[in-house]
Length: 472
Image (cartoon, rainbow, N blue to C red; front, side, top):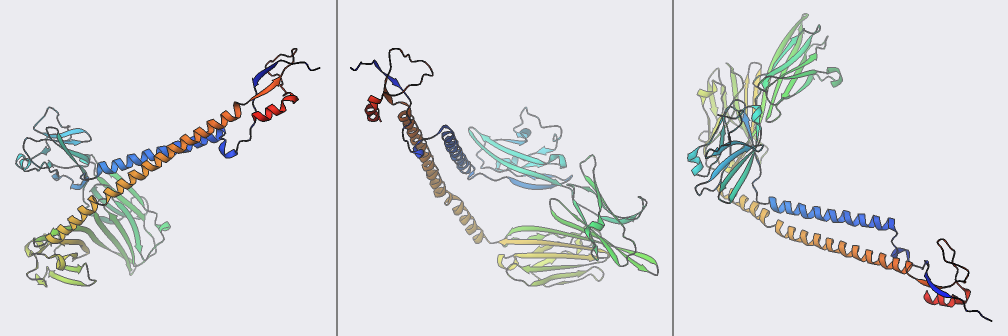
């Protein structure tokens, strides 16, 4: 006899054969989501970068100028005048000058030292004149021109420099032993000092000590000391000081020679500067050359090296003792003999041409224990070449970036869509796998005397194995 047992359906977890690649464990799913989130962040960053590129395209870059200490300086700013514009100058968001005058007053540091020409303003020139510049005036300035709802801004980065006017080299005995001291003063910013010797000495034996001190005006005094090496003859100490901003180098040397147990010293001073000048074809140009000393007896030599050639030619020479000048470029260049007595040996180019006069000009002034050398790279451009250069520059700046930005945006958008679709597909497959794993039911037989309680062990009725297989 078979007794019919009560039957009920109870959900029991059954492990089904799910492929490992289709089943995302919580750890793998978390890692996968983190990877996709990182990709999404990179995509957003790319969008932001492209937006910044598009936003900055066409804007005027910052203008950098260097002003000389205690001298007046002009901060450039221009616009298209239509009448009725309001102009404001800022330094670190603080009002420096405004036209028309407003209630915002400039700081005490700049009060009474800023001005603007109303006549030039009507022509679209809103440049600011800053008088008696000092280190405290350096920084980033902003020019803001407003008319109605239209607003234009430009920025100027201003540096201040106090040139090196002289370098001294001496032997001192203040520290109990002999030292070679190299010094300069009233300089800004602080220059770099290096030592060398002739014949050469290992750097670990020199070990100079350099002190930099600032005064109330913010200018620096630099002293560098080196222990004097004993028992050496025909030995030269060389102190080189380089300016931080401009291409200026001072080279001062002290040579010791022993003659009949007597030490003779000879000092020499050398100054080197480098500059670049741009000028238009056919416009007279003055190439500066001025020695930092007043010399009684000296010689001057101007040379020229064409950019496209490796040959140096002499332009002119001058001897102050004989007052004789030899000019190889008559009708093309000249030097004013009257200004040379004050150390100004500037060269004036007459009607320069782009092909013939573009190159490197070198000015050398040599006197007793002193030598000044200046190198100027001169670029003379013709109107036709300048126009072609500007056209090429405009075409390259306005054409190439348009397709590049469009292609970049399309690629970024496609990558973003693929990432989202992959994330959605993976989440869907993960949910389906869980449902297939957790939602199967089996038929289980329970006796009357048994009760289902938490933690009870349930076994399938052998007579119902076929049903269980059918459920699978």
